[in-house]
Image (cartoon, rainbow, N blue to C red; front, side):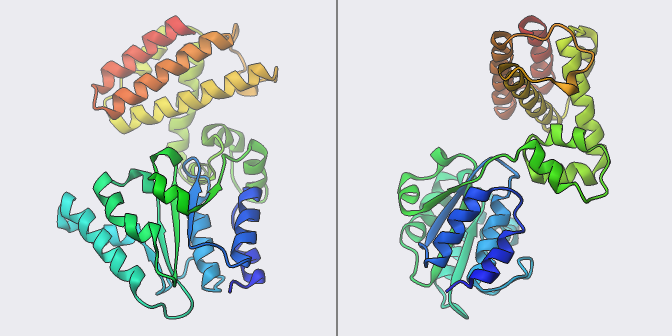
Length: 314
C-alpha cells in the first residue's frame, strides 16, 4: 500500500494541478487501478507526476533516484538507439514487456511510457496486450498530449488524469522566491508550460529569441511588412516551428484578452488591434503553416507566406 505521508510529500513537488493531484491521491490511497493515463499539453508536469506516482508506489521520497522496479520506456529506447530505426522500436517493446513481467523486488513493477501518442502504430499494437492486461504486480503510467491518439482499448482500461496549462499567477508564484529576471517575459512565452518557463529562466539565448518573436508579432500587428519579411528569413525548420508556436500562443492570448476586455500590457505601443474575426483568420493561417512545416514544406516559403498572410488578415 502507498503511505499517505510519502505520497503527499511527493505530490507537493508538482506545481499547480490541484485536481489532478487530488485524483491521484484518492486513487493511490484506495489501492487504485493498474493503468493510468495522464493527458495534457507539453511541459505541464505529466512526466513529473508519473515519476511521483512511481516513487510513491515504492514508498520512496527521492523521485530522482533510480529504482530497480521502475521501468522507463524512453530509457530502454535510448539504450537501443544503435539498432536501426525499425528494429529499435521492436526491441524496445520486447525488452519492456520482458521487464514488466519480472517479479518485483518489493510490491510493484512500475512502467512509465511517456508521450504514448507519438509511438508508431506497430509499436503501440505490440505494447497493447501489456497495456490492456498488465501483470497483477504491475502499475503502468502512460502520458499523452492528445487523448484521441491513444488506442481506445487502452483509454477504456485506464484511469484518465487530466493536467492543464498553468495560469500566469501560478508560474509567477513559482518564481517568487527564485532569483530570476524578466519574469513577465518568461510567463508570456511559457504560455502556461512550467517546463518551458524553467528552461527560459536558465537559457538566456532562448529567452532572447522568444522576446524577438514577440517583437516580430507586434510588428505584424503594426503592419510593419519590412520587419516582418526580415523575420521570415528563416532556414531552420525547428526555429520556424518555434516561431509559429509562439505566434499561435500570442494570438490566442490576444483573443482571450479582447473577449474579456482586459488590458494587454505586452502590446504597449501597438494601436488599432485586430478584432476577433481577423485574429481567428490569422490563427487558421498559423495552423496551416504548422501543418506545412510538419509535412516538410520549404521553410522560407512557409514563413514568407505567413508574414504576407498576416498583413492581409490582421
